[in-house]
Amino acid sequence: MNPFSSTQLYILVSRNLFSAVCCFLSLFLAAAIWALQMDVHSLEIVNREGSQEFAAMLATLTTGPVVRQELARAQDIVQRIEGNLVVEKNLAENLWYFYKIDPESKDILTSLRPLNPEPAPEDFEYKLVPFSLQLTGTYEQVATYLLHVETGPRLALIKSFSFRRQTQGSDSLTLNLEVRLLGRR
Image (tube, rainbow, N blue to C red; front, side):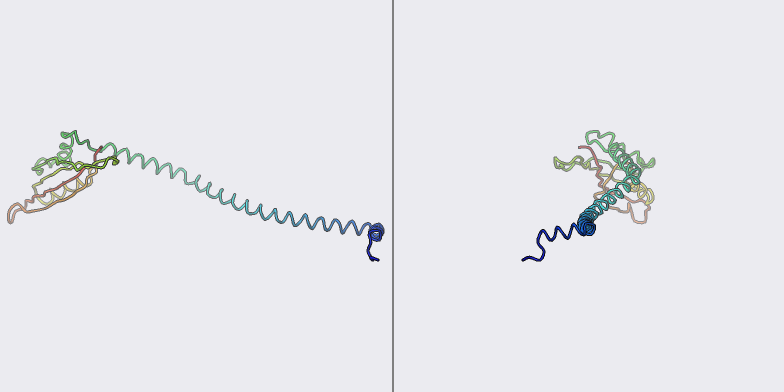
């Protein structure tokens, strides 16, 4: 015969009702604690992810004015570049640009010719408009003009240049220069 049959278990529980309820509650609470422990672990992960998102959002909010300021600055620069692009067909204005670079340029700019542009691919938004210049003057005059071409409002690319002295022992130099200005397509 089985020492712990169901009737004997019932008698034992009914005699020690308080102990039986405590055992049952202990088992139930142990299972509940285990379930909550697993839930707390998953909530910690969610909390950590939320904290990281908050930190990223806070960093974005604090750098937002700086980003807006940089964007406005970039838009201003793009607007200035767009405003200073040359139009290849507007030959008189393009040539006048080289004369108005330096007030003394009329004296040293001896030759100015537009060149035939190289064909640009169709997907390019801009094109290079080439010019050939010849300057004659002192080293300071020629160097100043060259500096004004490089740092002027129009985006210029100096493709080639050559210096030579006018005559032996003379202060005059001749600068041959091939410049390409950025222009609209």
